[in-house]
Image 1 (cartoon, rainbow, N blue to C red):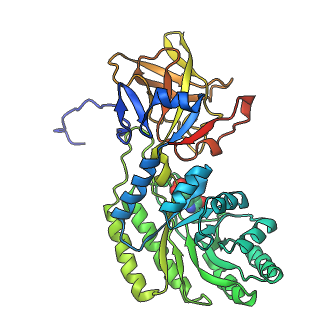
Image 2: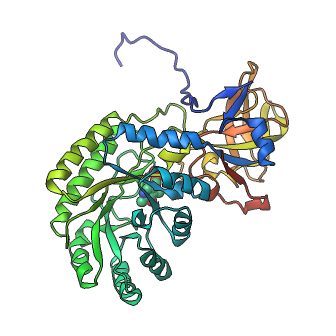
Image 3: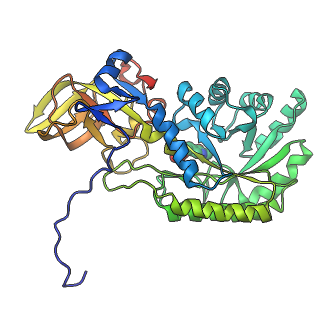
Amino acid sequence: MSVQDPIIPKRAPEHVSMSQFAQRDGELVIGGERLSVLAERVGQTPFYAYDRQLLKDRVASLRQALPAGIELHYAMKANPMPAVVALMAGLVDGIDVASAGELKVALDAGAVPHDISFAGPGKREQELRQAVASRVLINVESMREVHLLGRISEQIGLPARVAVRVNPDFELKGSGMKMGGGPKQFGVDVEQLPELLAELPRRGLVFEGFHLFAGSQNLRPEAICEAQQKSFDLALRLAALAPSPVRFLNLGGGFGIPYFPGEQRLDLQSIGENLAALQARARQEMPEAKLVIELGRYFVGEAGVYVTRILDRKISRGQVFLVTDGGLNHHLSASGNFGQVIRKNYPVTIGNRLSQSEREVASVVGPLCTPLDLLADRMELPLAREGDFAVVFQSGAYGASASPQAFLGHAPVVEVLV
Ligand SMILES: *Cc1c(COP(=O)(O)O)cnc(C)c1O
């Protein structure tokens, strides 16, 4: 800092605007319905609501921003609600599953088996049998899986379709969660690949391509471009060792959404340009390969809200606590206990008092007997009363299915797609 720099008072960073949702009569509108009416329709709080139109718009705008021909896969662990998976199956080009349980939901939802891929460490023999019988693409993550699949293919009389998940020698910089680079339980180390690739034809497996996934929840376009570039280069080198041409190249995803104050929505411009360049190279250097990116939260996260009702408004030594009927038991991520290092607030509002000018600083807490059960820590909110709705935005991903619902024995949360 030089001496001339003016002293600008620092404003606290704010959450990005939750403008994806409309308002009517001071109430949040979800799926075209006012929150209070939606709550009547659902019949209880707490609940999650996912907005169908926002999900459709999201896929459409992503297709708009990326070059034609890039295939979009939905990683359904982000939100495995069957109705959401069924909707997504009709919008995207494939579904990525991570267990036989998810595979069942995807198949029930009408996803085309050929376009389902199954990744994840520690696949059980039973899960691999189900995957082979379903004719989905299996992303193998170890030599054990190769051996098992060889035996299963022979027994069932169907050769397994496999892609090899690679643990790359780099990672996605600045990611919320790193899932590649260094020692990892995911994928096969690049160093071990020559041996594993050579084994595939010996075991009668059909090689289709590679899967690289370097990390998650990233808001830096240049880091995402770099990871996709490096993934492509690595796949090209590995293709030389493969038993047959690469037909499927999953470059990962990692597109983040803004959760915390100061974060901005991801700018897709440079990512689209970078993918167009990679696609042009693929036409020359890997002509049979279709390029795939796989995304979870980017598709569904911003389309969902978690809605609770305020049961009690307490003041403790001057601090306001709004005690709601749901918390970390339904929404571990928003409480800050699902992968956050330093707890920060998700965007929260009082969903039936959006046009109220009177505001106050309050903490929104759940009903569990633990100080970890915190949905908003001293946030400025519309002045709330008992019976109002405390709403957590950015809740369409890693919500209900990623939360310890049995903890403290409250009723399970309800999910609706509207
Ligand atoms: C979890 C996961 C995803 C989805 O991550 P998001 O951050 O939700 O986009 C994609 N691919 C793989 C392999 C995953 O494990």
